[in-house]
Amino acid sequence: MSRTHLARMRPLLGFLGLLLAYFAFPVRWDDPLLSVALGIIVTAAGLGLLGWMLIQELGRYRRGESIRSTESLGMLLVLLVISASLGFFLLNLADPDQILGLRTRTDALYFTLSTMTTVGFGDIHAEGQIGRALVCALIVFDVAVVAALVRALARPPGRKTD
Image 1 (cartoon, one colour):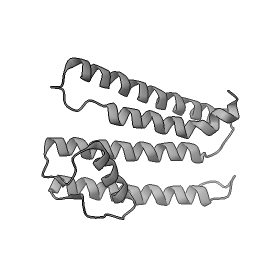
Image 2 (cartoon, rainbow, N blue to C red):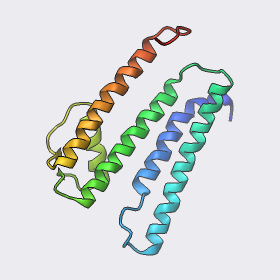
Image 3 (cartoon, rainbow, N blue to C red):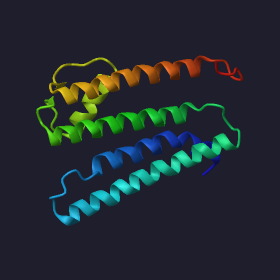
Image 4 (cartoon, rainbow, N blue to C red):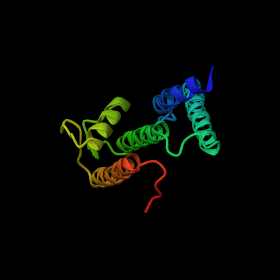
């Protein structure tokens, strides 16, 4: 596989690794041992794939092939979405009254994306104080990150940051 082809595949493979880790991560330790072990193995494989992609991206930077990479920024954004989704899902398992309407990992992903895009359909919403605090933190973080990304991408190449 050529280096150019691999560079184009990095975001997709990183996304696939994160998705595998997200949906396979065992959250109920009272499930049968084989199920928990398989979940840990698939999660580790997904994180391993993501780690390999990030190492490839860092190598690209070290070789001076790119000052900033939209692919790596995209992978970091996907990492944020998946991490927030897993956090909301685990919060819901610990206290189902925190986020009403959230039952599955897909619900958590949907809730995270609708919150980050400020669409907020209302069918799943934070009800408890912890849930609302996490949503507020995600919104503030999202606004700051998106503003920084837009600024970084809009800056002409070669111009130093302020």
